[in-house]
Image (cartoon, protein in one colour):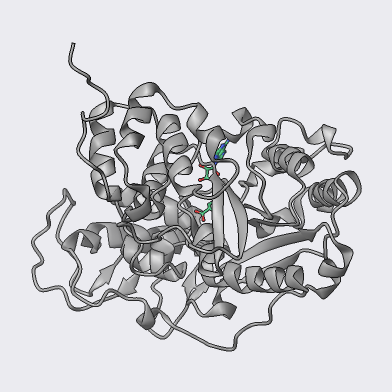
Amino acid sequence: MPQVSKNLFPKIDRFSDLKEHLNTLNLTNDVIADLTHFLQAENLSHRKQYKKNLPSAVNDLIEQIDIERFNWDIPFKPVENPKFTFIDLFAGIGGMRIAFQQLGGKCVFSSEWDKHSQLSYYENFGEMPFGDITEVNEQEVPKHEILVAGFPCQAFSIAGFKGGFKDTRGTLFFDVARILQEKHPDAFFLENVKGLYGHDKGRTLDVILRTLREDLGYYVPDPQIMNARDFGVPQNRERIFIVGFRNKAAANRFSYPKPLGVHTTISDILEDEEVSVKYYLSNQYLRTLVNHRARHEAKGNGFGYEIIPSDGVANAIVVGGMGRERNLVVDDRLSNFVPITHIKGSVNKKGIRKMTPREWARLQGFPDKFKIVVADSHAYKQFGNSVAVPAIQATARNLIRSLEG
Ligand SMILES: C[S@@+](CC[C@H](N)C(=O)[O-])C[C@H]1O[C@@H](n2cnc3c(N)ncnc32)[C@H](O)[C@@H]1O
C-alpha cells in the first residue's frame, strides 16, 4: 500500500489555500474552529488542547502547513507580539474583536453559534468561532487577560430572580459568569442594550452587578450608557457598557471615555459610487410607508419610516422593527431605473433608497476592509446586532491603560 497521508496535499502557505482544502474535507464548523484556533494560538500554552480534538485527516493536513511562513490573507490578521490576550464571547461578526485587536490584543478563543455570522467571522479573522457557549466547558477555555462579551438581551430573563450567581443559571449571563469564575481574567467588558438599565425596575442589572461584585469579587465601576455618535460615527446608538477589574487600583484608575467632540454626518458614510437599483424603494412601497406613518401619527406615536438628511445622523440600526425604513436616504445618482428584483409598480424618482450593508458597516465604524460575504438580509442582521467599534475601542483603551497602571 502506498503511503497516503503526508504527501496527499501540497505545501499550504496561505489561508485562502487552506480554506479550499478544508472545503474538500466536509468538516463541521467545530472541527474548523479547533483547527483555526490551533493555528492562531502559536506560542500559547493552550495550543495542544485545540490539536487534541482534531480528526486524523486534519492532523495530516496540518503537516502540510508551513506555519512559519503562513500568509494570513484575510482583512484582520492575527496580532503578532500581542500586548494582552482576550476572548470574544457572543462574538457575532467580531465588532468587539476589531476594537481589541486594533489595540494590540490577541484573541485566544471565540464563540458564536449563528452559522452565517460564523462565516463572516471566519472570512475576516481567519478563525471559526466555536458554537453554543452553553455547551463549552469553562475549564477548556484558554487562559486570558480580558473577557469580552456582547451578550444578547436574553439576560432579561433574569427578571424575577432573587439574585446570586447560581440563580442566573439558564441565562446567557450565567455562561459569562461561570467563565469569569473559572478563569478569573484581569478584566472584562460587557455590552448590552440600553434597556437593561431599567429592566424590571432595575432589578435585572442589580442581579448582574451583585453577581459580578459580590459572588465573583470584581471591582465594577457604575455601568455607563454610551452613544456611538459621540465617538465619530453618525449613528444615534445608545448602549450600556459594563467593565470590571480584579484589582481595585486598576478599577479606581478607570474612567469611561468622554465624547470626542467630532461630529460626522450621513454624507460621510454614503457609498462612493451609484448603488444598485435594488436598494431604491418602489413608488407603491413608499406610499405604504407614508400611509403607515400617517396612521401612527394620528394615534399619537411617531414611529415609521424616516428619511435622514445628508447632514443628519442615523437612527440606531436594528434587526427588524422597520430598522431599514427608519434610515432611508436620498441619493439621486441612480441612472438606470429598471428594477432587477420583483417590485410592485415602478422605482421612485425622488432618489429614496435604503442604506446598503456597507453603509451600515460604516455606521458601526467597521473599516472598509471588512469583507461582506453573506447575502444582504444576513448582512443587515449582522451589522444591526453588532457594536459601534469606535465607542468600544475608546472604552477598551481606557480599560487597558487602567490595567497597565
Ligand atoms: C448582540 S449580538 C453580539 C454581536 C457582537 N458583539 C458583534 O460585534 O457582532 C449577540 C450574539 O450572540 C449570539 N448567541 C446567542 N446565543 C448564543 C449561544 N448560546 N452561544 C453562542 N452564541 C450565541 C447571537 O447569535 C448573536 O450573534
